Amino acid sequence: MFGSQKINEENTLEIGGISVTDLREKYQTPLYVMDKKYIVDKVNLMKNNFKSDKIKTEIAYASKAFLTVGMCKLVKELDISLDVVSGGELYTASKSGIDMKRVHFHGNSKSVKEIEMALDLEIGTIIVDNHLEFETLERICGEKNKKIDVILRVNPGIDAHTHEYIQTTLHDSKFGESIFMKETMELIKKMDKSDYIVFKGLHSHIGSQISDHKSFLKAAEVMSDYIKEILDEGIVVEVLNLGGGFGIFYAEGDVEVDLALCLSSMVKIVEEINERKGLGIKEIQIEPGRSLVANAGTTLYTVQGLKKTYTGKNYYFIDGGMTDNIRPALYQATYTGTIGNKMLDKKSEIATIAGTCCESGDLLIKDAPMQKACIGDMLCIFGTGAYNYSMSSNYNRNLKPAVIMVENGKAELIVKRETYEDLIRNDIY
Ligand code: LLP
Image 1 (cartoon, protein in one colour):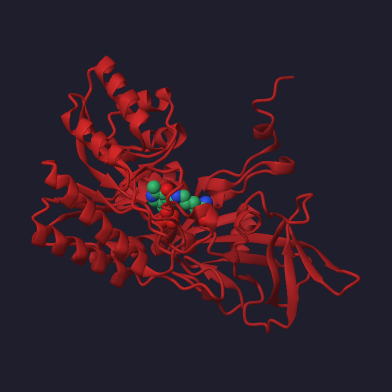
Image 2: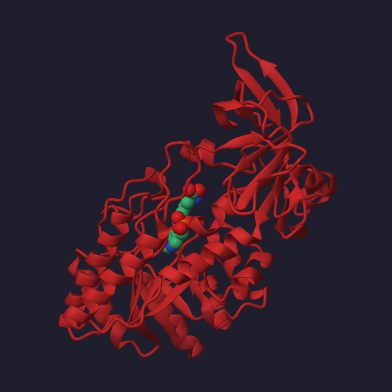
């Protein structure tokens, strides 16, 4: 169990001091529950370990993991920056009252409209992905007579072990410009000379759900070495952004990165190379997404059907599935679940948790030990705070669940449950 999760005297799971049965009564299921204390504690742990007396440090929450106006407000309260990757994320941020100077805009395929929007909203930094994007950005800045801080995303060619869909720095990745191409150095020189963009530094993100902390240290080292090559060309790289990707625990077999050790070691490596080689790095940044929010999230479902197949497979049917959590179908991701109103009962069954969609692959958990279920029981799946709500869909015209943030016995609705009217809002009839 994570954060403020507990088992109460009624053998029921409690999150943020509220039992899941009470939450269901008030908000219905399926329901995403975010544990505020978990996020606050994780940010504090990161701040306490990603710090230096010599270099400024900055944490930017990678909002693709989970973004709503309410989440932006929490980011503001926690005094961290925000990484966005689309016009939609930019817009959400702009409606939240967050300081737009603390917004970093990413993406390998930004549209002209999105770039214009970012400039009009006066965000802090654009992370440029490639040559052509730099040219487009420079032209638009010229037309608008605006200057913007820019960081170039580069690919340091690090083979970090994770699912192939979320690897990002293999040599043929779509992200960033390779540090092994001489054209990249030429681009940096052009950026440095530009009248409209202020070249601040470099960015790399080696992938997501990476459990070996040595991959992050390797990235810090390789990037620092590349910064020395740039310095030799007479250009100072002031900002080094090392991305996110810190692996977390979802289910048996997952190794969670020791964040305290990983972050403090990353800082030490950069500090050391910076000093030894006189690099002039003034600021290091990270962009954690999953590690801040995944284990803050629990999805609550109601068991609404049970089935045993001819071969003896045991299905628990729930009122959600791949539309609120696509990760098992997309990445073969594994999760841990429990019957929230039978917490201490023995997990005497081997059950497969199946969703409502007309897809054989709509299974959230496969063949896992589970308490014996009855219709109406509450199935709770942990670790659903990242890339669940943000990747949810209306497939089969299912409605997206509500999202609540809980803390100290109080629940705050941060996203309303969709209605059937919402579903046809854009249909022409
Ligand atoms: N920075 C950049 C540039 C990124 O592309 C990402 C994630 C992050 C930071 C945050 O990574 P995190 O700390 O969350 O691992 N949908 C996939 C994950 C895709 C990650 C994309 N980029 C999943 O559900 O596993």
